[in-house]
Image 1: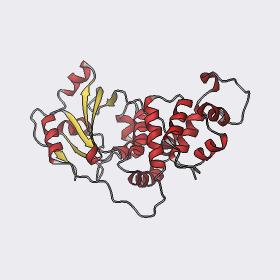
Image 2: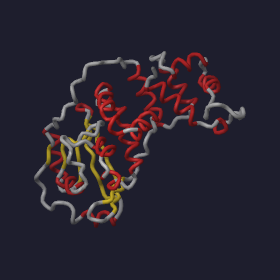
Image 3: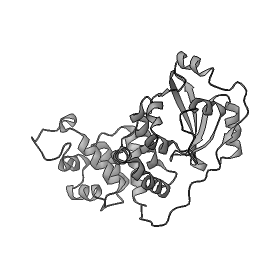
Image 4: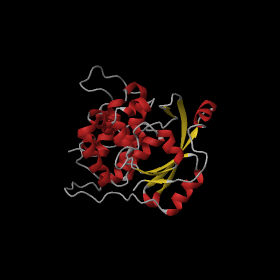
Length: 278
């Protein structure tokens, strides 16, 4: 049985062409990408040890080995952070047949007060599972008619992979789907993420399972939305971490003048009716 760490190392190795690292082309081979022996040499470890890591038989490589693998794979900064995170959680992953307690849906009063100050802006409190915990009226106006808030409780990840309306709403659906699948690796806890993924996989199908296994670090560019009222909106997202609660406050800002003009009639003009999702 593999591990998240081993799966990521193997996926990255398979995606690298030897010539991009200045290595000779050994001709046709059965599998694409970098040979295990070449990666082991670059990382300064044995092929047998690399095999154990990739196959999940070694769950606790030391930080020096993790850093050496990151260097050998020429990982970006975001990919290096993901590799270190996977190394951390892989060492503590133990199969469990007991469902963990769900992450708290409570949003602290001070966070709700912050949301209220953002009215009539577009802001939402969420977690890495995609649970939508509280939002401004501006957010509700933005997603009205899309079905995003129809879930009980609403969840962005489940919406993206199971509601056909999501493909019409998100102009760059593939990029958003990559983000949602990747974020499950980040919490709120390993146990919660694993249970959520296991429940979602049968209904979401290969579009979800393939992305979750790829460990592709998303670019997180502007969000392009095809609003039901007609205009295509381009929004920047500012994410403020609330680490004590494993939540995020996400503020959506117009990325261009056309979007700012289109949003003006959508939002409420008076602040007030803050929406908390129990």
